[in-house]
Amino acid sequence: MFENLTLLHSYILAKVHVKNGEHLLGARMLIRVSESISKFPAHIVPILTSTVIECQKAGLKSTSFSYAAMLLRPEYRDKLDVKYRRKFETLVRRTDLKTDNVGVSSSDNGSILNQTNYSVTETSTPCPSCGSPLLETSLYCTECRSTIPYCVITGYHVVKNDFATCPGCQFPALYSELMKYVENYPTPICPMCNIHLTRDSIRRLIDSNDILNEWINSLNVDICEDESNEKKNIELNK
Image: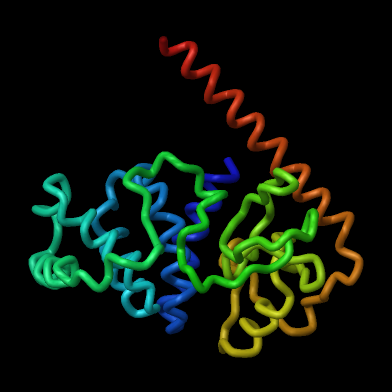
């Protein structure tokens, strides 16, 4: 449930970020979606195409190269718009994009929660559960083995000292990013619940331990239940 919501919301955020010219944010959310592309079977080529384009604009050259190469595989090549096919063919011929260690997995079987290969320059911020350094886009902490809630505005994981919630749906957010969103856009609405956001309605939660622990515990229970149900379904289908 949480993983499906994360993917869907990340895709929505990607479109918002791209529209607002935030190409790095848009690229990282599209990479998160593309890592689980099999969950979008009817939209594989458009999503991967957008991922290549946004990664190029954001300077994630190697990741852009990897997804362009994926789109040129026989199963996708004929579905790719001709104008993009030619550009991507040129892109994958450039050997200078193959050498850095920003990679894309050859399949999408890994969980979106622990993907950490988006960018070699990605910033780390503290895990809100144990304080260990964690890449901004990572939603799973390997130190405390916790699934981490993400910001409703950016898609990055939340942090304890910059925490707020949407006044409508109560979904977690980075306070600084929520305020930036409200101050910089003429009609800021929550991308989760569509409530109109105002500066006066947003509060930084100084003592965020209780609500963060509640979210983290809830997410980890949900994921355990999802895994249990998936195993049951596999057994029933044998």
